[in-house]
Length: 112
Picture 1: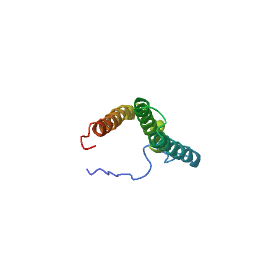
Picture 2: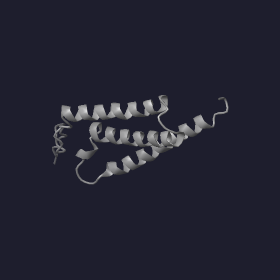
Picture 3: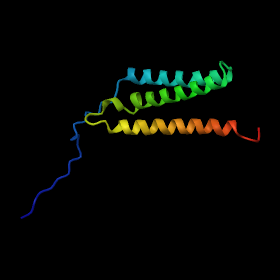
Picture 4: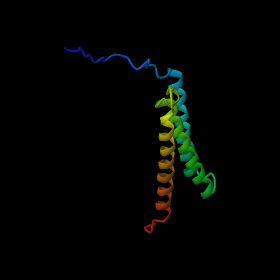
């Protein structure tokens, strides 16, 4: 007895393919630009002290990460269990370690 097995290539996962509107992408883009310009100006124009600048850099990096996930990676559209939440937490830890490590290396560089 032969069984007929077919593999579908259509939209069977219940995923409509709609990810976001143009307005959401524009808002995400503008937030990304703002969260990039603020730390640049804070460092270049020396707006605040060293510790406050580091805190500002860390805060804007975390916010930038969240904007990327919500507006461009569509984290909020996930149905069912939030497996991406674990990815978000791990990503935040990596961002903090990379930024703090970069600041530590620049601060302890003996060449300057």
